[in-house]
Length: 143
Image 1 (spheres, rainbow, N blue to C red):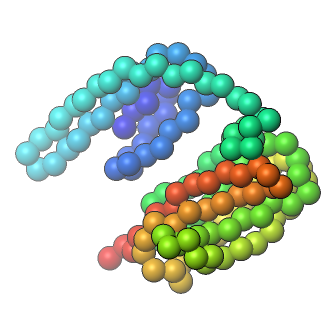
Image 2 (tube, rainbow, N blue to C red):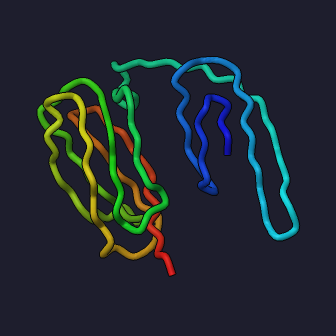
């Protein structure tokens, strides 16, 4: 994947966040033993930031790698809060892990190690009061 803003991904189902509004040409190159195919699509992006919106309160949020083997990192920035509650749910909505992290500086980089969990799709919830950010986490095993 080439997102048209200088960013690339080799993931099969990547998520990408644009920093600025505008039109971008997104390209996908798929390659196998028969050759390569290229697909292009122009997308129009309107970037808005509303930190009063409880679902859009972080200025930046990166979760990587994703998919992963159960070990992944979040790198976030936003309005400083005393603590940030992090909860990982399985596909049935059951709590797999919960921890409170120090977010008093307004920036946080934290690595989670859940290599004990079975492969599957999980939901990571970051909460500070009424402010919530959700992110899909895909855990898969390498053979």
